[in-house]
Amino acid sequence: MKTAEIKSLLHERIEQLTASQLKQLNDMLNEKFPKKRQLGTMPGLVKYMAPDFDEPLEDFNEYMSDQHPEK
Image (cartoon, rainbow, N blue to C red; front, side, top):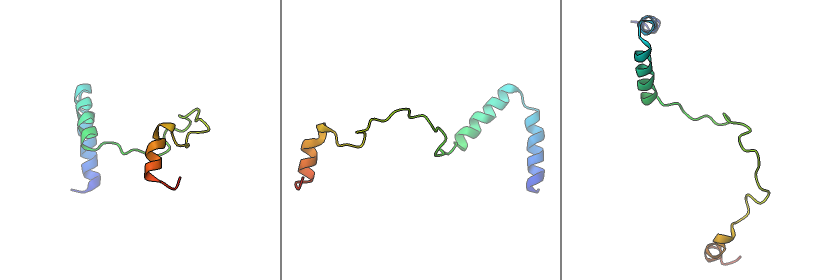
């Protein structure tokens, strides 16, 4: 059976499903084939970032001086 024939058969069978059966099928497919994350799908989500965002935190000063004695 060719791919096009399989797709056509599936389409016909899906058209006959009840709303409840469609939901079950959708849930089953989502478990089997989870959506892959895509970068850039939520642009504008971060509204503000502090200017010192990348600066070292004071709470880690002692740890950082142990790891990098030259500082």
